Image (spheres, helix red, strand yellow):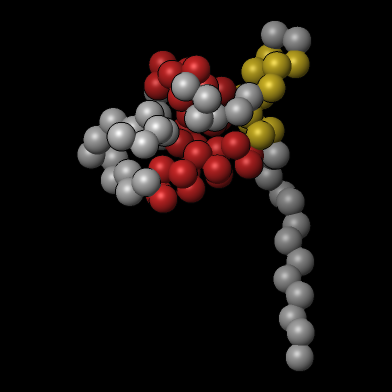
Length: 79
């Protein structure tokens, strides 16, 4: 028997910088460092910076895969 899970989107798929920082629990300055390092993808729409939810999820997965515990600095690159 096959089961199908239907996922409904009830939350935003694009976040502004403040929302992304809040979700990640980081400061804006660290967030912009991660963007500069190429760890988080952003889109510019006029003067607005938008962050797709998958970019946040990918960063969290990358941090998890690299064993980041929050006790050390992580720049997204292998040491």
